[in-house]
Every structure is written in C-alpha cells, then in structure tokens.
Length: 301
Length: 332
Image (cartoon, rainbow over all chains, first blue to last red; front, top):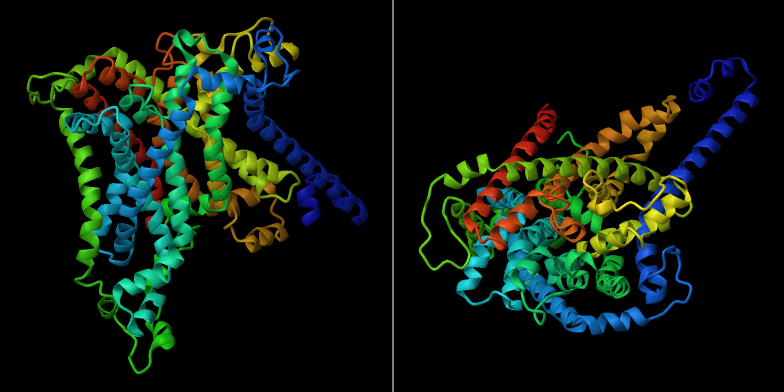
C-alpha cells in the first residue's frame, strides 16, 4: 500500500514487488537530487553577494575601473585596506564602536539579570505587566525612541558623545536582554535553590553558588548578542554622533559613500569587510545558543 | 497549552514540580515546603521579592517606560529641534496634519508593501531552507554557516555590499545577467523608478531570511521524529506529512517569528538608507526614513513623533488581526 501511494501511478499497483521497489528508489533519488538542487540555489543566493564584497575589497583600482568586471581579482592586493585607513578614521571608529557596544552591553545586562530573576521567580501582576511592556516596547519605531532621548541628552550636553550613545543603547537593549535572560532563568530548576535553602544557604549565597553558575552560558549568550546588536547599530549612532572623532564604524562606513553615491569602491569594500569581522567572530561562538535564546523569549507557550 | 512549545524550558514544570523531590536532596529533618506560599517563603521571595524587584524594575521604568511615554506625549506638542521657545501642547493638530499629508501616506503605502513582501518572502524562503537543513544532506554545514553571516553583518555593510552587487557598471548582477543573455544593456537597479523597490525588497529578504531560518530550524528539530515516521508508515506522502505533522508543530514558532519580522521590517531604516536614501523620487522612502527626515533634517520633533505613534498603531492593528486567529485556536 505504501509503495503504491507514494509512487502514485496506477501501473505500480499491478507491477511486481521488485519493480515497485525500484520505482520507489528512483523516486527517492529524484527527491534527493531535487533537495540538492534546492540547497545549491540557497547557497548561491546566500554566498554570491559575500563573495563579491570580499573579491571587490582585494581588487586594484585599475581592475575596478574595467568595464567588464570579473568574479575574482586577477592581481589581489591589500592596497584597499591601506587606503581605507587613510580615507577615514577607521581605527578610531573601531575603538568608538568597541567602547559604546561594550559599555552598553555591560550596563544593560547588569540591570537585566536581577530583573529577569525576580520576574521569573516572583510571578505576579508586576511581572505580567513588565513582560507586556517588553513586548510593547519592541513595537516602538526607532524614531519614537530617539526623539525624547535626544531632547534629554541635549539638556545633559551628551549629544555627540559616546556616553550619550551608551545611554540610548541601554534603553534600547534592556527589554530584549530581559526577555532573553528570562528564558535562561526559567531553565534553572527552582528545586536546586530550594535544596540549598533547606540546607541553610543564605539568599546571596544561593544566587552566587547555585543560580549564577547555571545561568552563566545564557548570560554569555545574552552579553554577546547585545554586543553584536550594539556594534552593528546604525540609526541611533547616525542621529547622535556628528563629528568623525566620535562616530562609530557603521556611521563612518557611510562616509565612504560620499555624496551622490560616487564611491571609491575598493576602500569601501575593504572597510566593510573589516567592520564585519568582530560580529562574525561573536556569532561563530554564539551560534548554538542563538536559536534557543530567541525561542526561549519568543515562544513560551 | 495545546501548543507543542518548542522551548521546553517550561515554567510549568518547574512551577509544578513536587516539592518532595527537592526536599529529599537537602532535607535533614526539615520537611520540604508543600505549598507555593511556603516555597516562596523558603526562598525569601514573599516580601523580600520587592527588594529584588524594585531596584531591577526601576531602571526599566526610568530608562524604557519613561522615554517612550514621553515620546507619545511629544506627538501632541509642537516640539522643534533647536527651538528656544517653550513647546506648546497643541492637541491632535499633528495627527490632523498627517491625515492630509499625501507624502506621508505614499511613504506609508511603500512601507506596508515593503514590510508585507519582505516578511512573506522571508517566511517562505526560510521555511524551505530550514526543511532542507533538517534533512541529512551533505554540505548542509556550509549552508548553516552561510546562513549565519547575513545575520551577523551590520546592516550598513549589507547595504554597501548590495550596492556593489547592483552597481550599474562594476556590479556583478548586470554582468551575470548580460552573460546569460537576460538583459541587453546594464540596468541601474537602484535608481530605476519601478525596479528600485523590488531590488530593495530582495536585499531585505537576504538580510532577514537567515535569522528566520535558524529559528524555524530549531523549531523543526523539536518536531517529534516518531510522529513523522508513523505518518510515513501510514502511507502519508511528503506533502501530507508536512501539512498534518510538521506544520502544526512548527506553527507557533513560525507565527511568533513572522509577527516579530513584520515589526522589525516595518520599522527598518538602515538598509534602505544606505541603498537608496529613499529615492528614486521617494519610491523606497519607508516611513522610518520619512520620519527621520522630518525630525532631523527639518527639526519637526512633534510631527515626527506623531508619525511614530501612527506607525505603532498600524503595527498593533496588524498584529491583532494576525494573532487573533491564533489566540482563538489556542483557547480551544
């Protein structure tokens, strides 16, 4: 029965068992081929812009000026990377990005950890409201976040400063960190804490010796995730940082584009490749935890 | 809990765990707590929780709730950038002006086309890729690795990269299409009035698909294998297995991810800012780009805040319509 229904053709019903078996194998082979063809399409779609970016970053100016571009550079050169550092304060902007992303990550996660713990362990109307707020805040468009903060930061003379941007990133990152961390806190069995309490461990002791070690992997994942989001962020940095000395990498990159989009393609590509490397490294370390973290926050039944 | 929750970090289990089990471990003479209240008291969570909650929630109140409520209140004022005069409360004037602002509505229409198209394509393509990656295929590690890259990349870099791909003379897309004989002469993708929006949507899909894939794949791996096998033994074909076993289990994840994707896409800014700056002729001016110009080019803070509020309203309406069906299903 299974052979006929999967083969689908009426002739299969009358044919000998061996023939039906062969037919099924052909079908399975066709299915496999189809799957590989599909996978190949996806690989090409995902990879070709990346290949092109990296290839462009190694091409000489002469080659970039050619009418007929080639997939790979004929004479690979590091010239573009040198030119990129000369054209814009790239090293400075990398440092700025590091300070802002690092600072914002530490502050927002430090604030989110106790809150996440309290919200999970102390279920009440407060925690429902707080979680509702986390969801609602995700719907706020950036422009609505930045206008009030801009006004506040202007009064504090923190516009065009890294400190101001750190504050903005904390505001923006906090709900998401809280969301992600709650998933990890839930995974820590409350029975372990109870066992420690019965054994007479004090509250801080429980948090330090029971909860924190179990929470560590999730904590690291949250730290890295919020670092990468802050490192990659563009809109807030564009609005707040106006002088090249304070600008982060995302903003500096757009300066390569120049007016009217007349860009020096080689250095532009080279700088883009450089700006991607830190995020890529973190993501490589993070990859196993990404989906579970998102799911823990997104779908909790 | 009809949903097969993929995140099996269920609070249900921890909450309902028989306390005896925990007591058995550490209890020497001390009886294990039996009621939720007793357990809370044991952990010092009954009244002590306020000490834990307040310092934690205070920053959220000050840093998140405060600014966002302030933003909404600004939409009812004539706040302007760099103005020294006091800001006045002007009621719903901003919203009345918005209603007549045809540029805003154009931008809004484009924003909806963009968000719906990108979200739908993301879901379909990501589902296809996730199903393939869930098979035992060679090279799937390569696809998995590649799928992470767009997610990790700064959106500015994604935009720059696609500008290089779409470049009229030096771009690889024109060259490839010319070689394949699909186009006669080079197309300027990003400044063509009718091609710019589709071209930008493709970039949006490329940038957002991997994240959806990773989440859907995690969901797929939680679909019980026995169920699929049982269906196969019962003679269910590939399609039948997908519709009656895989999809129902995957649906909660897919719905949640789609809702999030829609919100993110509707509020998207950086990609299109880098690709086209909203051009040509406003054909790709998403609402966020419009509001950004209004606020930081023309300094109309109050008006821009009103736009932001309207954007929230649209997203909220969309989500209600989209999720209502789902919530009803859950209730049954």
